[in-house]
Length: 395
Image 1 (cartoon, rainbow, N blue to C red):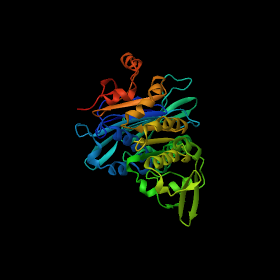
Image 2 (image 1 turned 90 degrees about the vertical axis):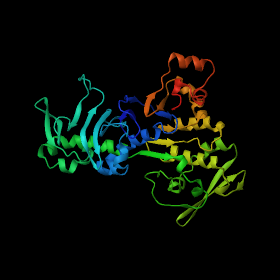
Image 3 (image 1 turned 30 degrees about the horizontal axis):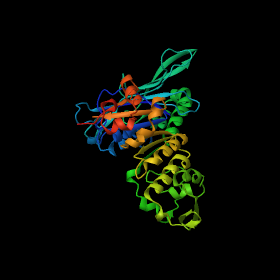
Image 4 (image 1 turned 45 degrees about the horizontal axis):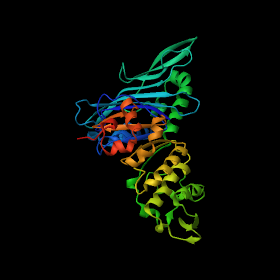
């Protein structure tokens, strides 16, 4: 799980942001242009960094578009604390990245255990790079019962996650550091590879109302959902969940036809084409596929899942959100969706991240807000009216 995150000076996100404590369910609210999408992209930046490297990650976002245009600083800073729920405790990654015109490199890159061990008062610094000397990193080495720091040359042009091959040319690193280093790095890279991003507004529903291409790729549900057929072909256990929305006796017949798959909804013993489903019914089928059939995904960023859904379905959607066993970041403009999470917010089960003018904060259940809710208002009611208690509106 992503336990904590902080980003500053990224696109329209301001300098001086606080570190955010995150939960399994995190709902992002704010007016258009307030920074919700850029916040999600700043987390995905870390995934791209591990997969593509620094230069390509910045270039795909365009060098002159990464920095906040209202800031004079030529760097972005972020930190992220990850618990992969495996053998390692929570790890914290911190980075300062210089960006100017077509030039980018690391000013700082550190990995530490976020929480102290049983005999430690401070977090254990696994590696500290470039913060004192450019092109140098400091690793702890245990020798003769004592921990000593060993400095090793590290390039600033790419992340430490992608430098194992060059680092192992150093005999000390290869023999004393690499065995532990490789396990930790591989653990984080494997975990981050399971992150998914889906923007429901960008998904073309017409593509799912005709024969579906079988691609043979079931390791990752693509952001466009164009390999939907590969996930649905041998796994229809979401149908019982789907019945909760249809309120009909529904089943699906699957008919492979060479490279394509035909799916026929059968409702009250009558066979229909997929094109006969409403947009809302189709979107629910896709959402349930994201929640339940992409079993490898651990973190999902979901933009506007409420599109085309009747308000009565949102409470049912909430139950599937919790049952998905994924950490979710849900960006929404739907006050009705906020309404169904009011009790969960009061119970501390869900985070509401409020965005306003490029700043983000975690909504706190303070005395004033509690009084409004006691008067019968739900979060969505306050959001509809632009109440400053939950952010108000940008002007």
